[in-house]
Image 1 (tube, rainbow, N blue to C red):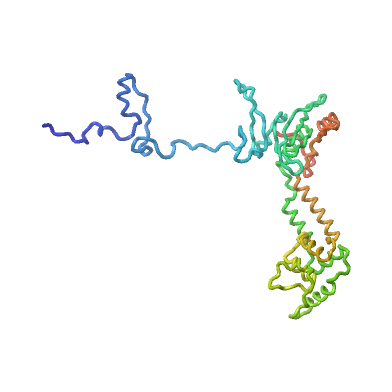
Image 2: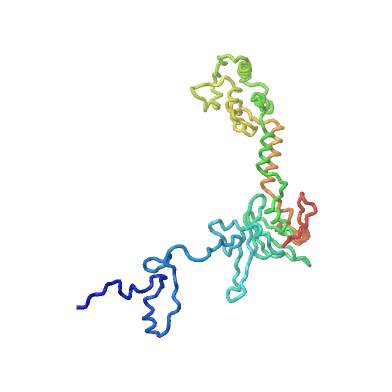
Length: 364
């Protein structure tokens, strides 16, 4: 009887183990049937295959670089499709897609400013109108005689319809997305307003200023206020304060008092309610409480109100930003359309204050 052969001497184990060749065992049957040689098999390094010869691990080859973030063929739904800076029409030139209009969405500021000189029908640019950001869409051209540089644009958020020439439209985009470095920041302006609106060091002075501005010369708490001020001014201060006010008029101020304490006068209630206040605006909630106690309409002094109005106007101008109507002409349905188009077509772009010799021509 023949001695059995050891499994290790089989021809199967005589095959080279590396490199592993995919499709190795199907090669003989394939050649027998087709009488042609197989294409050169794919050789995979053994460190990147599993026990069955399937590739594993990271892909081989150079890493794929990041996509271009400047332009997209479709709006980015995840980032908010309304936040693209510019949308321009693109037409394909071959086949059925020639008649299909598609759009290029631009999200980068520098790429958005590199637009063409001619405004394209359907183009959208994200610009503000009276502080509200939206997209101005180019609806149509407004030719007038030999002038063909004016377009009608519509703001999708406010409905503002405007005639604007192409040079002003390009300059408006540049002014919005390239702010003036000499323009103050909103936070700096607010801080300056807070310093101008600061309260006087003495709460008694602020209290008397409000009473004088409201036309109140004498009231029921005058004697109690004098007694409280005299007690507070004594040095050293006596331990026993003046007696508390017996009426219930000061209950509106006593909501946050502990241990069932009561105020001795309206002045003490005012000081307690305005603790921590730094500006006159911080005293606005206290005016209503004073009015309910005294039965009068309370107001701040005139100089304080004038400063507050100036601050509101300045902040409103900063919040609204650029005045779009300086670059174009608002179109009214009942107005002189030809006159508005002519005015918009011949309107030069406003020059920045920091550079009066600024050239309005847009650089490609």
